[in-house]
Length: 537
Image (cartoon, rainbow, N blue to C red; front, side, top):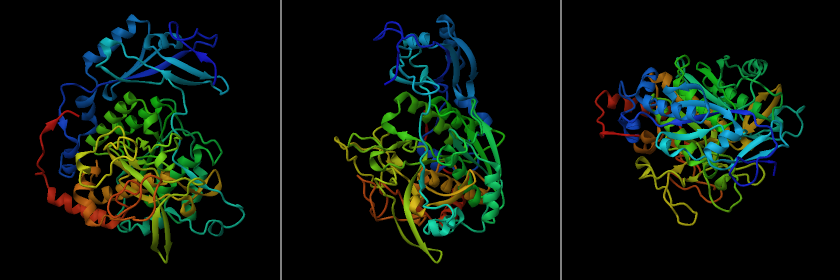
């Protein structure tokens, strides 16, 4: 435990620690006068012209209510906080004040760990929103300091880097080999699309990318770094750190869909930075990503409910503009790394508005899959996340999938995940080049960009965004051969079975069939897809 920094009036006396100024973010509710399609309609009607909002219309329809912003600004002035900036289209207001003043106003107890540099802050309780703003403010972000969430990444230890990689890791693959095994459509390209990659630290080296893509005979994709709220492409030089995550994402997505533009959103590893990166991608009118890959997350149980609500608003926005969000399902099995003996799922993969990407072990011979099982190398090398959410109820589109009750006491019903799966076992992982070192990486971190590349290829072939895929996947596609069922293995508490299961979802993608079925659905939908009415989201 570190030093205590407690506001006046809370338990304990204020410490003699410095009292610096802190910028923090208030997330406001969406405009109250806006009605939007129900979540099922966002999926079922996604393929007809005009089903998605233009990005420049999103803020007008879903931004903060001006009256709400005035109320927050008046409160800030009355209590001595400064308004730093507003982003009405993103429902964000950034305020600043002295730490002790903020703790007192929001009734927060905070622990600071002086052993770290800079000192790490962690909330023990709070925040409490002032009663007259309780319906206006959804969440307060930026009170904790990072790191907020880890990447979902596993590296295969190589015995000797002087040994050729194929001999050191004979079961590993280059990403295009995995794409071929999953029958990604060879004649379709992601030309004209952008894949967003969300990163919370580290960076990539251009020399790595140039060497890697040249060595596997793939054209170098266009890669742009997008700084978010002080984040930047800052490689550490340590391939075992966040550089591994960043470079893995780029080399997987870029080698499978080299015609796509890759926009890499770098943000601080805080709740504030994480949400800002998601929002920046959603509102990015320059790069306009059609799919976003997220390989960072943490146990759902560790996320404050208000923070989850703020992220859910953003993921709903992503669905409305037609952006598919692919999120790694976690690398610590059904317990998700918690030691309480219960099953847990990872967030944001548990969100009903994202495509949760689980992990398998993939074995192949003569360019064909010979065996695919649920990834589970615990306790040494991890296992895929998956299970039943304790936060989100069972979505209507998942009602016929056979999602089991939670294995936890009470056996509640909830959103089941993952939705699809792909190669994640580091023993059968992906050959990459990070900080000039050849390496083999696994983890569901690799599956998010793997599936994001497939979505981008389908999007490029169809000439439009795929959008919110989950309702379509469950209600129209899963029974039509778009996935290879994985029926062997467990992630701990949940076992694979025929059909959907809580460790591999529907299984691994069959890319060519997915594109065929999406095209057929697009033709059948035309512009006359009926809606089920209008509902507030």
